[in-house]
Image (cartoon, rainbow, N blue to C red; front, side, top):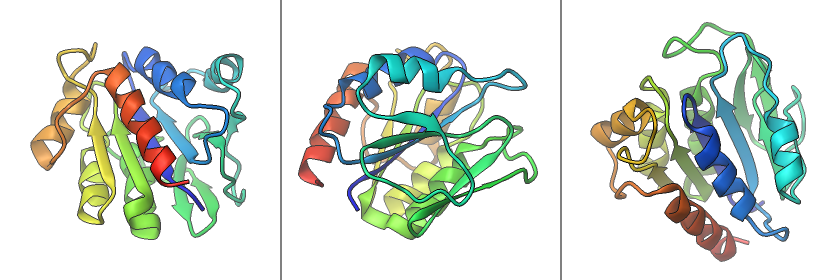
Length: 187
């Protein structure tokens, strides 16, 4: 299995997310997992991504086997956790005032896949993803954060940077470049 990329996005994070995902080449062998805070609103993210990338994108399903070169989006009102080779979904309690929660995706991903994980925290208005980024970097993975000065809502990137972050924050364009380079070196 190649790189595991986990991305957290909330308010103001759709544009940087789309920039990162659409920059990936059709030959990308990474598995991408996206947490998007949309509240009680139905997400149309799979439709948006399918129109803009050649990689297949869909809501994750419970017990689904992880495939390379595919984008998995956390379904509405479910937490998504990565297990060895498969996805677990549940409706557990809210974490960081949200369900889905990025930390509940990031931390198990780090525990199971270690240094193969790339975690990205984009624009958002809470601290979700900060603990997860720390878990990723502690286990040798790559933790990336959108530059707070570029983020429409800088609270999530700032929380990740405050908690424990060895990498400098990057613009959406630079995040895309880092992800592409990382994927190329881990295929």
